[in-house]
Length: 516
Image 1 (cartoon, rainbow, N blue to C red):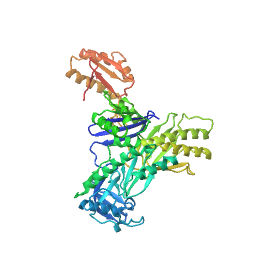
Image 2: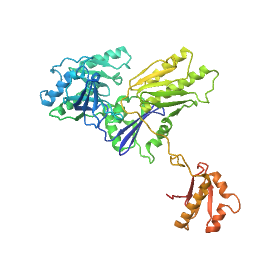
Image 3: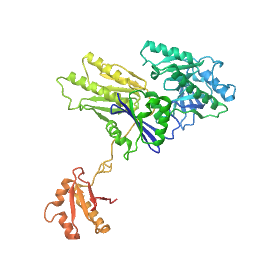
Image 4: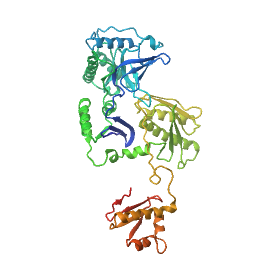
């Protein structure tokens, strides 16, 4: 599989397109001046305690208070609170936790008002970005991610990614990590660490510990709310999480972003530096590489498949609903084989659409009914295989008795919504046009205006073929009447792409004469 990352920078935002085998599969947008991204670590202040929700609202500087539920506080909450307060007061003089005394863990079934108080300082990490009218969602279980490992303070757990299937490799990585792990720091080993030496892991662990030290230093006498550690920019975080041998190109149109990516690749994968290139074309980079075209065809209510089948995608407050339709072009010997062919093709597009639109929450898919249980099992297997490429956490349930498949997908950031519909150039979005019989009156009125403003300009009138035929019929026709009146010949040409009410005037240089 070939992967390309195409980055389009503008003064206000950065747009990132991930293309796999020439297909757009992910589209990310990041404002250049955002202050609340997933992974950012803050020192916040508890504003409200809500026993009815078993949650608290935390002030981290956003216009909406952030939400922290009891289940996201983690068992080590009391320990984190103690560490935070001691660091602010200067009692905790080192970032290391070797001699730090842990507090008793909180119970899973506890109540928020038993462990937290109003106006307390709290160390938190953004779990979900602000969505709609909701503020950020928070977690007290701090994680500092790297390319190969993730550092988790206040635990002693070592975990290896489930995607590392070899038992020998899993055991090897556990032994390596245990040998370099600082006391009271847990480590999650990522898939990218497979086959790496202890020196590579130790180097990255040192970088992650440096970030934790920065957090500790900033806590001293710090006033809340305050950002202590920022997540990488979107481009770098995608490279950190997804960069592998499948990446063939990284194309960037902005020199500053290009330099930042080069520096980042120099640190994490020096051998990959040659795949990045700076785009210098005149057209927008998304147009040159066909990204905008794919955006136009992929977003909207319907998504058409190569076979002629299509998906209808609807979103509600409660869930997202996807309906699979065969379309008129799908012709097979029997209904079952048609249903299987359409469903398997639709499954691939659905997996792509979920990633592309970043759809989260509950998703219900209405596949075409199939009777054969083997066919249902095949569809389920294909859907799971296709969704393996999705980095978001998800759960897929088998087809129900009604032929519905239910999927839950992690919602981390707002869904990507792009309006691909364009305003009708005939009615300007009103849904109404002037009476057809009055089109000649409009043309004559505009000609009178041009005659007064540009009396010596040669004119060409471009209209719909039907209007062209109408203007030239009879004797004397429209052209001849205008010649007799103003001694000025108007050349009339037709354009099949025009609507019936559309017309344009051009001068002798074929430049359009704009009247508005």
